[in-house]
Amino acid sequence: CPELIVTLSKAGVSTAPSASRRMACRYATHAFQFNNVPSRLLCMWVLEDPNGDVREEASRGMIPFRVSSDGVYKPDSAAPFPTFASLCQEGISGLCQRFEDEKVPLTTEAKIREALVRFVQDCVAANARKSQTSTESYLATRALGNLQLYADYLGQSLELERLSPAGESAAAEALLAVLWSNRSSKQKVQSPVTEERLHSRLLKGSHRGGQEALA
Image (cartoon, rainbow, N blue to C red; front, top):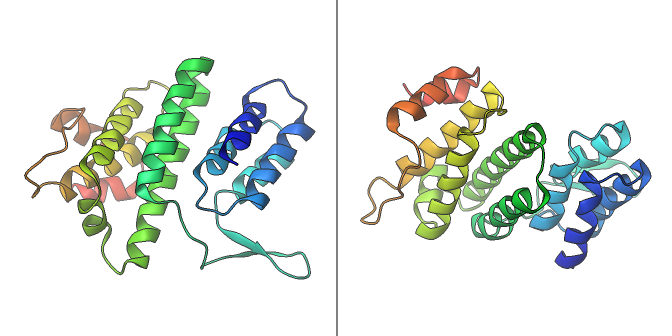
């Protein structure tokens, strides 16, 4: 159940033994489908864990997989990805609230924010392919409220001092994609950053996709 996952995920940022953190992460990756957002968030919390076994389990949880009869982990192309709505309502909203409640160090927050940005982009691309449409068209049909929530999250991430240059470019590219997909709509997504600041963030990092987006 989602409540149990939320409770277990606290092990990722506490002083719990590494075995407990790994067990919580393993439970999230094996007991829930890939489209379960709380379990993916748990993995994000421990992607930078000091214990290598915990990091390995967390990284595994960010990619859909299946376990073969002989115990081998294999990619699962049929696994459902989280929807954009669930990523916004369960992922972004829950994550931001937790940052406030737990006073997460800025360096840790920056890494988690970047992981979520990249994960949302992966999910958008996967769901667009499943719908046989482009990512732009997929985003254009999402609810305005969710698009604005995501845009605001990206804007907050861009203002975070500890975000890596590549993370800044990834967040800026994602924000540009949201604004571009919404350009023809009567109800516009309001950009949380100025156009000049957005473009400077695209150019700041080495994320190739961000630079290509300016072309």
